[in-house]
Image (cartoon, helix red, strand yellow):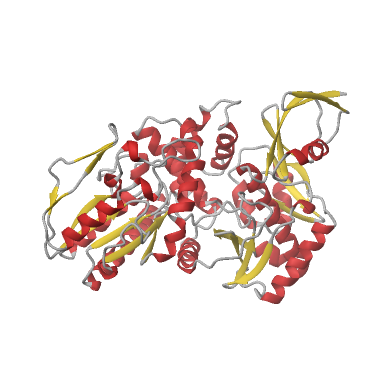
Length: 551
């Protein structure tokens, strides 16, 4: 017998009892489905067996690691259904590309028909596997055997990926004869994947999955066409230049083709910024450029580079930060935990902002405020402004796209830009990289460099940052006149050098440890590359340092 401690209470079990058996005993005490456990600080899948005394913590679908496990398991279940309904090549060639709201877009790459009829057949096969509680089996293969298995199943993307892996063993999952590799944990059987839907969409499929806030509900799919086409454009561009996966990028690094790749990427972004500037000027009436995007999306660098493009067209851009319109600290609303909520609209003096902007639009001379973040007070330091005919204001802040932020300004005087780092590279065909991972690593590296903040603090505050984005930014992204993707196709290979030492400092037992270990494992896929070749106006410089702009 072995002793298991759960919530401070000890119980005895026969050696070899599965974690799933123990989880089932405690399920009624938890609000969400238990997906994983941590045994003595190490995350374990539920089908694993308890072999020694341990202290257990449960993770549910409401926890980030549990939600990711559900998505991963549902994805493999979808591909197994494609394999059974449309054939092995269809599953092999299906590319899991990106998320749009609660939908995961899967591209058929023209190998099989993406119709509602096919979607219904795939969904029905998934439901059959769920009803049968078909198990997911995990086996650790020696690297040579795994590579031979990938070769036998024509998994060229995985062959390329594992060419650069140093591990001696590879974990491969199987469900009823269908094999695949996944980065991360899996649920024990298909019966856990109870909530999903499948829709035919834009030449592929949307696999609809629940949000971790409400993991037992599938919300209706809400189209976000501008976001979808921006993401799709990025995926197609990566494919055209031969960098669709991490293995492709590693090949470029080994071949010494990085400088060329950097030049092409930077040229693409500069061209897009120039196109946006030209559209602004052609409209004629634009006086306010409103830039908004989630944390670490590169808003500051974009505002500088856009300003330079506007100057080449005879405009005189002036930056304004919405943060300078924060209300005084004592007037800032508080969240449910009693902490200041700096990300809600009520933290901004919206009335004063609109009054000042209308005064400027009328040609008046206005003294603009500056917010002192040390004292938490608004100050006036002689920052006067008066707009001339060719002057234009470049306004940056998380509420820039919210019509309530600029309610008094004429619509024709505004041009709205949504910016985000929309990842356009996959680990392999079936393992996507969430855009949030790239932004988290960006912020971690920047905060360590500019604010002396360690990775523990950045990871700890990330859920709060994400909640603010969900509430204040993402609902308004489709209202933008233009979307700008700030991701650099090679940036994770650069950030790796800076992020890994920060992540290794997080000790076992700290709440942020599990996320740190996940990110470290993720970064292992990339060969590192130096930052020296980045131009000094690159958006990447906003995070690793060396920018020619004040960022």
